[in-house]
Image (cartoon, rainbow, N blue to C red; front, side, top):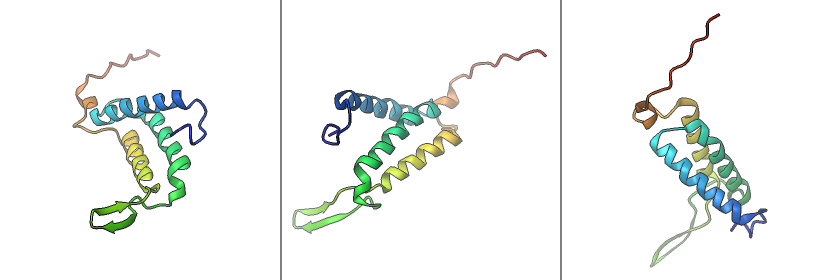
Length: 115
């Protein structure tokens, strides 16, 4: 898909995107390293927004048709990307919360400097 979009080094960037989504998604689920993983995750989301989703408009759910086999949906707009970015920004600024792995892990002690 990246090659059809004209992205340079599509094979490498496909693997990097997959790595960012797997590691970043795992970190978000566990509630650790959120400020660290939010930057590459936001870059992937913004790239998807501008290269793929923006041409389909705002709304995520578009009914294409209803048939006897069921409902067929159209292409996804950028509404969902904005929702993901807002959630990621909220976690990065507010922290993952008390039920996260970060809340359980011991924090490194700060070294106090004498004046």
